[in-house]
Length: 185
Image 1 (cartoon, rainbow, N blue to C red):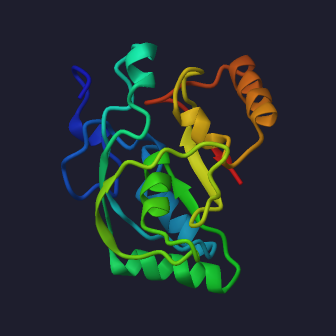
Image 2 (image 1 turned 180 degrees about the vertical axis):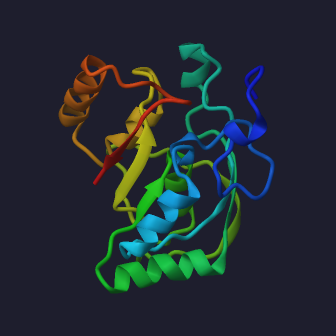
């Protein structure tokens, strides 16, 4: 936790199980009020337990060796069922954070069925990955060297992603971890 920052400012409001090395920052902007308003507008939520790993050593050469690093997850039966139900009614599954994407893609079989599971994900997602579980992503703005950008190219063409990042820079958006988030659908 950064010096002087209360622990509750470094967690999501829905965090329930300690164990992450870093805050799952895409969910940080959510308040209980925001979650209730989404629910009032028909947005269903489902939760997984994540123990995020260290996303960067702040050294591009070391980080490049860590593609597909391990992160612990628990996808409960209710969440697997919620994804299945959303798919059955042609709804969209929007992940809040890149670790959620990695976890859900790890527990989804080739036919697109999401399974309850506990484990470690090592999956590395890039533009060549065919997404089976997730249709969209709410994520923070990542540094240009970050492997997270490879994952974003599974959702959006690289040229459009670069253009969006240029616009965000010009508009003064803040970067990961206490920065702004963006929705990619």
